[in-house]
Image 1: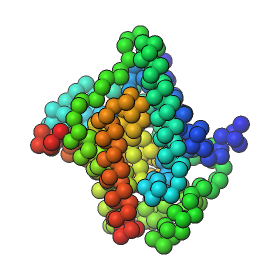
Image 2: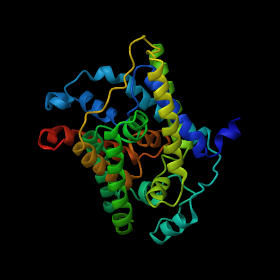
Image 3: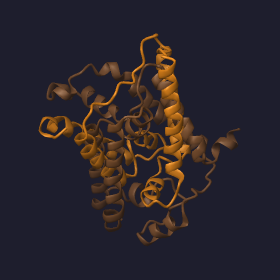
Length: 186
Length: 139
């Protein structure tokens, strides 16, 4: 059983399981939205004293912080105890393309060492990418009122047109960076 | 106390699934934006198909919260397009730069990738900046 679970999970298993997470959260009277935790953390850190947007009873969102904490534990569990080291079956074209961009560990590593490795993340260019990227993730998700879980899964499942517009935006921004900016940054 | 374990458990299940599906991997996000694999589209598409079915059934049978019997939270999003298109595009920029959306950020920290803390700290700062500029932005 553990051996079976330790292989990479195919998309047709993972997708329905993510839908199960949505079902469980809706059925407990909550919502599925991970980026809301960033707002809650701002509020918990005292931002409500300066900005009305963060002036709410963040303790009512503790359930979602618990989901995030669970996700952290899940990442630990999966990486250390459910991981048989099977290579990631990326498209060989993707692997070759990344090699020409200087990323050599596509398929063998979970994250590129050139961006997240101990000896690389402090390089000014890499640190700039991580900080700027993270800033846009936080700013954009709150501006759009949700991320992949809140819009692409929850909102689209509930047939919300605003979520479709948001997901189109995700791809406008993502495709632009991936095709026109990353080749110069990597 | 039981609630603590319920939500911790749901998060744990979510975290393991995200890691094992490889959706938390920078490589899979890069590949997705290159349209070089069906993998990520399969995950999101099948999650959506089942999500639609589950959402429909909860509404159809007027389900109440399993925890306290209260009505469920499936409100419509505010009708508008600007905030969704502009905000969504900005998030897409961050998603492609870091290869991670908010869920995977938590999963990756748990998996031991400590530099991801920098991304989370920057995301909290970005959220704060939105809160500060909110009244000046088109929604």
